[in-house]
Image (cartoon, rainbow, N blue to C red; front, side, top):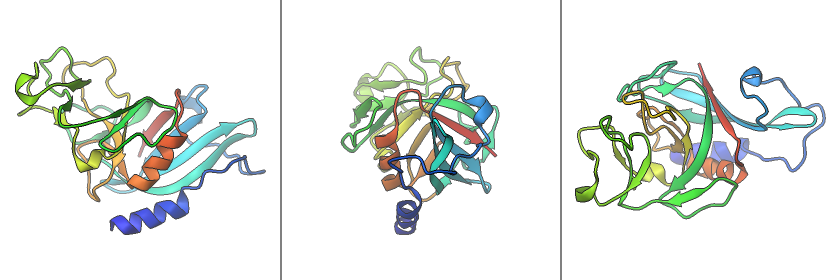
Length: 216
């Protein structure tokens, strides 16, 4: 399955060096992204699956430069409002703040953090650092690392990942740890997951100000 996804992504994700004449289209998110010039569109196609299209705005308009990339979403689907542990992918338009992964930086315009065994995403709703990346040894972390939404980031699914700006106000219980990350072939806990090779191409293309738009 992973080989099939990689093959599909290699065929479908092609970044053009220049806009193609007559290729400009009007994407569904056009009225929701302001002046953004890079948008990753995620549209649900099944209970736990979606398709990802990569869009770039030029002087000629919006151009799809990567289309039909298979994706997995939350095991409970999508929703406008989510809560910690809902297993749903949030719908809306979100920033793409920085990238991270267990692998080395593939390049690109976003800040990148290579993570190891002491990197966590704090999902403890009682923690003052809720919904942020933290670095600490498990026994020394000032937040709960078990029995909460906290995640250790040294896992295969985070070979590469991009942080989605969901719940940036860090409202306790309003959700944490939403990423565009490498897929393991199954539904997620609320993230969007695609083939790692396609994700690396996207990370290399991304620049500050890029957005991700998620809808059914």
